[in-house]
Image (cartoon, each protein chain N blue to C red):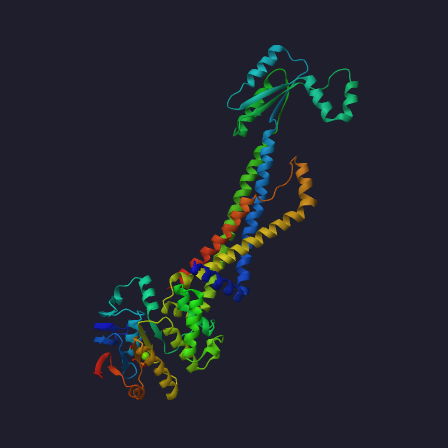
Length: 295
Length: 219
Ligand SMILES: Nc1ncnc2c1ncn2[C@@H]1O[C@H](COP(=O)(O)OP(=O)(O)OP(=O)(O)O)[C@@H](O)[C@H]1O
Ligand SMILES: [Mg+2]
């Protein structure tokens, strides 16, 4: 405990003395974690979007106006629950009209004026989670062959593309973040090494009067941790400001256009992880520096 | 207190700084190490501080064989003794007070005790009025007295001093010797390396003369 207090006091003092070079390492950590955090915000929201989309009906099978009972049975057979189809719901012509009226109340009166119901009956089909695009495509083309089917609408492709994009973006984000983080760790290491070098004589004296290793190295490692933590803090603040600044002009309309409730910021726990990550990187940088410096 | 047996130190260049040295220093003794430049005085003190390891033979201090200590034990051993370096070796960015208090701080001595003892020690060496100064702001003699205060503040059983009067005028030298004599009078073993024979004569204590790494004269 006494050693920790000593290390923190010395580290704060040393950081303040070497604040010019510390700005450099805090800056690189901040940039690395900002990039990582920005990608995280992006993927968190795209994942939410994907989840929203997969809640919606994925395959709509519209029936021809004159569909016979045995044709309908054949269609239902093709839509039997299995490896691809999770469930199906029948929407009759009158159901469809009721929905239409509910959704577009302005047009309800004109719809009533029509003597025949113009909306087709349909099956709304939920797909099994994790089903491949090809399997769905195969099902859709088989359904199109079935007599009595007027059209098959299939928006799974969009979901698949979205999911692929999320995966890709996440990978790019992590690769870039990892690269920048390593660079940041090395920068911290070098800044700590500079501090160590400047205080080489002092370290020798401390060793000669029998200072325990925790007292000799501790301050430098804590200095790395502080740099990392400050860098992460700067990154989180910058992310927050960027998020807040783009919220009204871009993010809210975007969310509305994509049918999302709102665009979310980083979850609290992720922010904590970023913070801890920054400190860990700083700590490793500090350890690296003290290791290499002590012959 | 100190027992050196067949102690040799061979540096890489093939020079024996110490050669088959046998020496016993009793508890409570005040001993001078003397001899010409290059005789091996500093080498012996460095071995006693465990700054270096002997090439041959062994040295025992208060029952501890210095060759077989772990690094933690080395740290504890060094904290248990007081060492005065010829070039003072004060930590430049710490105040006089912090320099003297440093080892107690590391030892986890309660702050009020640290402060009381440091202050008393500074008063004893006559520099309590400079306790907030940095080492660079002091004269050589003042820095030397601070170095002695640091070495003695923990009341070590053994004090080693390498040329503690190296760059001081005779009056100041005697003053510093008096400080060491005083601590010796309280029971602390003191070993002082110096080539100042006049000083040894004035202090009047046992002296061991080294030359080319061997003991040539025991006073
Ligand atoms: N680190 C070292 N590497 C190689 N040789 C060394 C080293 N330190 C000391 N020596 C040699 O060991 C011998 C003894 O040196 P030492 O410093 O012990 O002498 P000394 O008696 O303290 O002399 P002085 O009175 O000048 O301080 C000298 O010949 C010196 O050149
Ligand atoms: Mg010497």
